[in-house]
Image 1 (cartoon, helix red, strand yellow):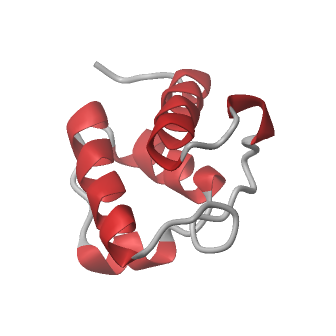
Image 2 (image 1 turned 90 degrees about the vertical axis):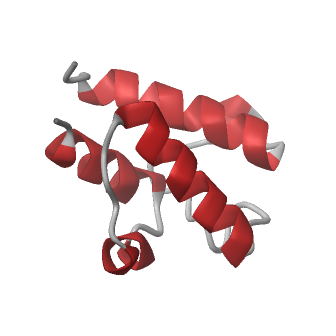
Length: 82
């Protein structure tokens, strides 16, 4: 099932809020996984795996390295849904 951009964004924001203990209302599209949340490389890999499961997408390691903001990640998901 193809999801609308807003639904993808909201699911991602909810996941980030829960996973990184961040207030949901403080999450914006420009949220940077490297600087705005306390995510190390293991946290990021776990998030990528969760995103793949949540949205039925495959994210290559090369692509994952370039997904540093919430907005980039949402765009990627929207453009790669099956």
